[in-house]
Image (tube, rainbow, N blue to C red; front, top):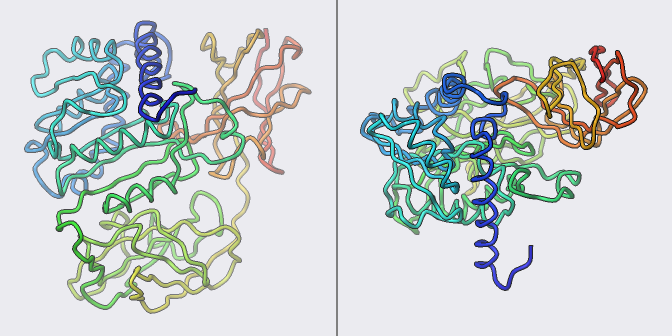
Length: 459
């Protein structure tokens, strides 16, 4: 897209987003919001919204609200669509404002949630929230929205203005597509396959806003979740990261510290450190460094303890949890780890043990013919696309190291992403027009690993 200046370019993108999402809302709003199946009932649609609100908000409610009563708080939902999640947010919080670039989505949300008095809806420009006042919301949430925005500059514009309307002490949790792989970068972006806004941009935004970066989960995937808090200290005040000597009082696998040995790779290759001496109001994932075997890395999470601890400091000090994805290429065996703040304060070294895990054989668990939603029946035709849901992949899976075999034909995926709600990876492939009809088998190859066969019928 060409334009004379950046502001005009933003407006051109906004026009496209409004046009396309109004059209999608008129076709089948529920499917374009939640690609479960066509013509979902309100009950089916809203049930998936309840699941997402519980997973993204309710489980972290004390951290996201700062311990305040949710009924006293005001929430902004960016990209509310037809109100799938808004209904359930309104049950949790005192006030909810749902905004969307699509006027037709907003119309449907108002109609569906007409009886909910503490939920309001507003159509936005697509690039900002100009009608909303400064420092008005206690919590901002955006789920599965920015992944469809065709320009990183438009995502940036929305984040900038979201920060304006967030109260000091408030939190924002949002999702972006953070894929930086060349195969994805080369794909033309539109209002469905949006632009990437990766970890480097997220960390830079947090640093520029002097935001407390609590977490970046899912970097290099389509579903990267970032949580920021707006600091309450005066602008320009010198940060203080510690209030006592740093001490790692416990450690283990990030999801369960009772497991002390950690695999060198795979989904569970995440170290959890439990540290005293950190000032919880100030320290974050941009200001704490984890040294592992001499390599320095920024953590994915710095915040309240979210995993069970097997030990205790016994001092009554606040214990912070720090989750760190292990750098690629670390050898199995004992390795030194310590935590260091930006100003050089360091903890004593602890020794952790890494092991080489057994490979996980990928497993196809579902196959969908996208055009007519049939399962296990693949209809040939122009531009036909097939979706495979696969267990046993990891975040390194991409179109460069993954292939699907249909009968005797080998096909390169066009897209691979983690689907948290399904606990599986989505692998999209084109169905070759000349694939033989009849009974066939699907197999997925991830590197040297081969999945069991999945029987299909090709028509």
